[in-house]
Length: 228
Image 1 (cartoon, helix red, strand yellow):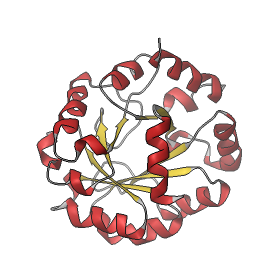
Image 2 (cartoon, helix red, strand yellow):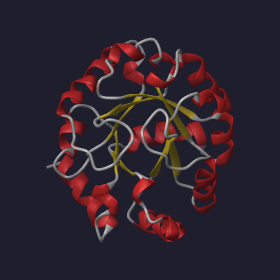
Image 3 (cartoon, one colour):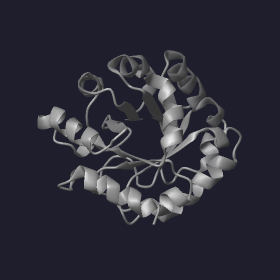
């Protein structure tokens, strides 16, 4: 699927992207089946290295395992230092979209270009304290901008409303009108509408999906709030 998936996502937005960080990895195949039955189009995988963020999760082996279980779009969020060293491996493992953090690289542009050369969608992410100006020069090289509404590293944090204006700021920058906007952190039935009203097209949700008994009902409920 790779980079070709981006146009489809734009047409089908807003979309909920379940964050696999909170899934039951002992029942990975079952979890993916439940998400597919719930209408999920994209799976979001958070890769944390314990250096860029104070937490450690998984690497390309899990991406590969998920890829072998589904043909859904795999959106890989690299919360790690030196991401350029591992782009090839994450692409080979099956990533359709690869997002790096502006704070983790000196210059994001060549890394984004490399991701696109391989054939994946290229995303650039910023944490809440990082101004949009930090990615102004990178946007023309990106397919997607990911705005973190919580500090990267742990799930279950409270949504920071102050980041919503960043979506509008990104749209106004050169290249900003042509990319997908993704929001990650604290997405739930109470916060999702303010995100989509601000321009978010892809919404990463962890607890709001995986801590519910019925994934389909949880996703439908959140999307229902968007149109309320």
